[in-house]
Length: 376
Picture 1 (spheres, one colour):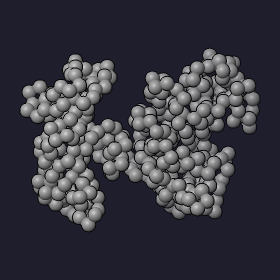
Picture 2 (cartoon, rainbow, N blue to C red; picture 1 turned 45 degrees about the vertical axis):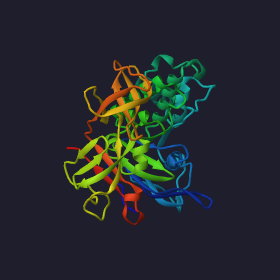
Picture 3 (tube, one colour; picture 1 turned 120 degrees about the vertical axis):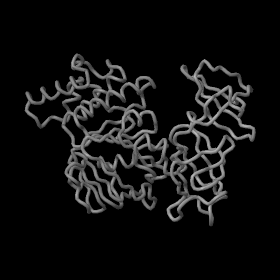
Picture 4 (cartoon, rainbow, N blue to C red; picture 1 turned 60 degrees about the horizontal axis):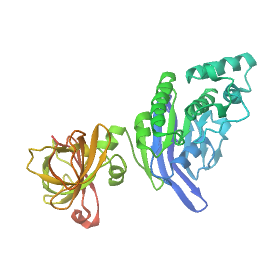
């Protein structure tokens, strides 16, 4: 096995996990360096929580290896118990002890320390999460957000090498989730703590993580920044799963141009459809991914689209629009442009990043390779 670089906290190599004869995680690999905050993101049942549990030591691995801070903790022939991995865990339901005070909950994992050192560590952790004034309260006397902070303080108290968070905000309301995600990121960054989060909520992942891994059916499809996942998805699944958007058919006009119903998109450099061809074949069929911010409402534009649906979001509307061909696109429009369903409005393209995927009927020999088109 490869040795773990001194700056790295987590190395997962060719990880496979199976339940009986059914393999649920396939050949997954990732690395976290010290201070990284990462996220495994995907739909329910994709295997993300299983990976987290394997890192924590709650699941055995069928293949590959897991190393934490230079020490291998899991392989098909090795399984270190969770308490031997120096991993902190924040569970979905917080798992606080209802009969213990806030201070005693935080101190639970510090029983090996002398009393004075334990008390000082508890005070430090409660100060870190802003709960110093609540040390003597019990969990039922706290709000959901405060309980989440207690769970975080308890996980950080033993000074773990790695912090694991399993859907830590799922039981909280939307506004509180967003605020706590930002607060938690600030705490982890101030302390230089390495962490990996599991969630199905994209906004949580975007608010928290430096790197995000999108999973589907037990496979890690892309390990990248939120920006690249949104603007440069590596597969059609990632493009569909991350953010909002619609696919519009197009035809390749050359190695730098693709023609769509809404106009010609020009690439700053030749784009590739697959690893073994220099560029898409002229006249090849592609599906172009358009995000809501790529489709601009413009009353002066000659191209018209019918409003099929609209979602008021305060500062803006998200319109679902039908083009003359019947294809639909999404458009994000300032809320003072209040159009009725059935109304025809002017639209134009303004796409800084355009991603296209070869249409199945346009791919040679039945393949479905991808093409990335970045507008000039």
